[in-house]
Image (cartoon, rainbow, N blue to C red):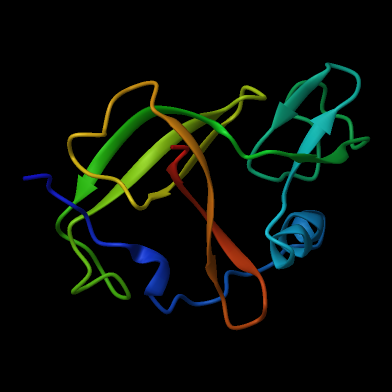
Length: 142
């Protein structure tokens, strides 16, 4: 019998504070699109949003839509949590390396213990917030 984890998409989350420099990211989530910053001088992506490039220190960053697909780099199973996650354990928190080379930490949903393996291909899943934006989560690609 496969062990399933709780699906954290139904949890009512507070809307995170939106800083001006990361507003394109949050606007993208309204349409369930993943926009991440790209540094044209270094030719590299960066995540989480920042006001300047982590590679050059310049502020000439571009926002580019990416597929959100990638591979499971690492994970942990949460059993002891704080609100609003109380009553929704166990669930999986994953580090995903996007195909563009950046790491994102998010919940991994629709997955069983038997599926969890480094290199598991994942795609975006979304959890709605009350302001119309969405929180990025991941689920297995297959």
